[in-house]
Figure (tube, rainbow, N blue to C red):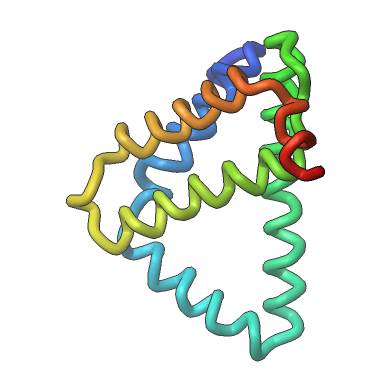
Length: 133
């Protein structure tokens, strides 16, 4: 992300590119994750590792998203929920690609994450609170 400079949107885009391209986007990585996920229910240590790394991953995305919203001048959404949503999209794309890399390309996955970000930026942060009441 350092190569993206200081522009928050460019840094988030660099994150998408790095995490949805080789070597992260490789089918062989899926086997390792499946074993890890399978161990979570049976190992306190693995549960702790998962909880810690997921929280760190989410905080990284919250930080990147906060900078994007601050630079945009738009109302900031609930960054925790925004990061959870982005993790779900990102990880879902990664998993689906690992299961069948012919379904969509790395560039299409990156584009979907970019579109999600652009859509979130175009949405008023307060619109979610009206639906919760």
